Length: 254
Length: 221
Image 1 (cartoon, each protein chain N blue to C red):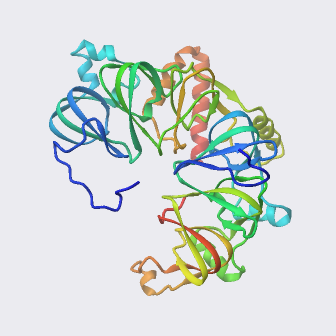
Image 2 (tube, one colour):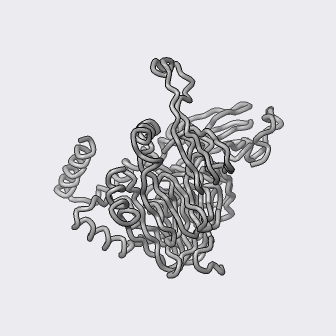
Image 3 (cartoon, chains in turn red, cyan):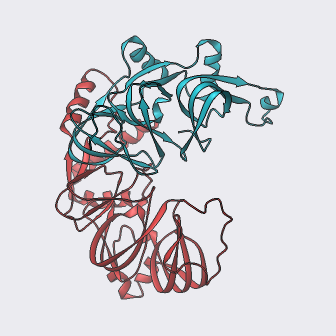
């Protein structure tokens, strides 16, 4: 909050912070080797750094495939390789670095910005989230500063940023909300589904990460993720689902 | 935690999130979709309409001032925030009421009475203001004693007014507390008509005794 009114600082390759925030919204990585970063996260760099799609890398080097095991998200990631200072940012969101030590942390895929290859990325069972396993540093963006809370806690799915060392959440439905919504629907009131009827319920020990709820950003991977899960359906069920989705699109257009 | 009656107990977690204790004696009303998370035995219930009587219900229906709200009841602590907008917590002491657009209300004590009312004295002038500012002819007024959290884009600052008149950009106006008159002044010349105006043709002139809250942005939501 301070120094916002003072004159801006000028940084050079040696004065840029090493693995630290430049300001709340930009982070400088002291790159020596490889980092995984999301497409579009790089805003500037000094030094000799090459950026290559993870897909291109994975076909050549076995370690990449071992570290990045998520076909759904692989198209959104690149590997930065070389030496220098790499500045990362994301839509003016707050950027935080976290260090895991032999840990296991689940984070919203949209908000994960970059991670060291000492960490391993896998898809979480909860759609739209990824799991980071191992030891190392990663960067995540959040809308406003991150809020840490401890279970027992129930979180709104949109506000949930991630969780660490907690058993996977279950879904809690607010009975009072559902009963009320149904009653009002019968009365003919316009009650849209956007409500608080559904929450993620955390129990056990650990930490939950929250952010101020954001406008849900279009996540290109989500469609792929959902589509891959339709393998569970029988052909006739899949056809019925397709017709329903089509009807929904047409209803939204009109 | 000795929050007796309706004294304020909203805790600002950061610039965008507020933590609100809820108890059977202290339910709150919040914007729907603004709950980020909670601990304890807390339930949420959608509520419709605001205020009481014809003015409340009809006004809400007519004006688009029918901001979807929900009641939060039970025993626990709830985090509220909305789309990354900044949050300002005010404490109403019962001596003056708060006037603001309904969609600015993030959460407030259920002990506060809300009503929907005409902004200004009505008539052509109010109609013009509503049309111009896009903020509707109706505003929400909260009175009583208790805390309220307001949403703004980029945070608010308070401008105390004691007899003088302050001009505020209609888009930057968030709300006001106290006995204030809010009037729209329009100085529209031919330059504005052809799009070469200063962009400040319309201003809200606020006068009286109280405090007006202004956001550091002309972006509405």
